[in-house]
Image 1 (cartoon, rainbow, N blue to C red):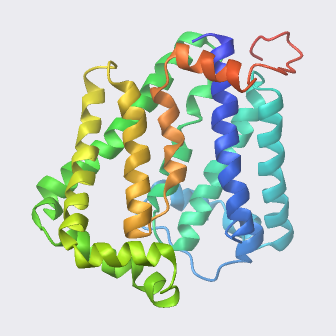
Image 2: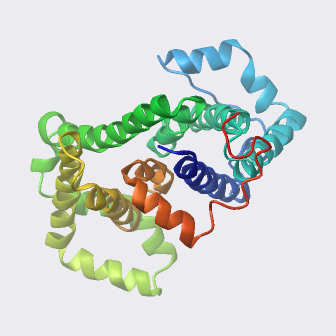
Amino acid sequence: MNNSQRTVLTRLLTGYTLLFFVLRFFEHVTPSGLLGPPLFTTGLDLTYWAYRLLHLPQLLMMNHSGAVLFDLLVALSGVLALLFPLRRKWIIGFSILIALYAIGFNSAAMIHTVTVDGLFLVFLPFWFRDSERFSLAWQGIRYYACYLYFSAFIWKVFIGNAFFYWGQGAGSFKLNLVDYLYYHPDTLLSGFYRWFLRHEWALNGGHVLTILLEGAMGIGFFTRKFDRALFWIPVLIHIITYFFADVFIFELLVLNFAFLNGAQLAAIGQKFKLYLPNRSRTGGHLS
């Protein structure tokens, strides 16, 4: 992968991640908005234990000044990565801060939310200066994306057996959207939802379809021929789960960029002017 493609990828990933960080800021779920959450969990994850043992929650979340500074550093490092996409120190700093935020958010949320899973790994290839190593690591991100969805398929079909329970789709819909229907009974969307409640076969069929779509991601382990379709399958999955299960996990789509090939990256770079301005003081070379 050449520097032009790397520039486009850096700006796509950083911009996408910053967009959701800003949305989270206005939803008051970044450190400056959480205001020192009283409950915290670690579970058995060694990464989370290291986060606790280093007293990072006290520095980044419990301390108001530290929390505000942390939010500002995330935004600043992200902007610098956008402006200087070939200066590795900015993307490395941004990735570390985003990973710390993901750990802190999950700990305060008392659950390992899947929506931030991609943020832990997707920036790691950008730590490599060598183009060959970067390309190999980036291919690893593609395989990780395939694994993430295909493992969900395996769990629901062979372990949790949710695939074989026909009423699961309607049950999940009622559990997750009852509040919306109660508080917003007259909206167009509520009318749309009521139709599905009268036709539960559509909800249950959609549930089965979603699981099969997750299974289709396993194709990516064997060939890249269908990457154009594999790019859109997670998008469809997340749209379905958002509207019919009230689960917002669009941040996970940051992994989808791994399904773009060189020609597609070049086309995106040209269309959205992502190559310029490339203000690297090294004349376009990695530093």
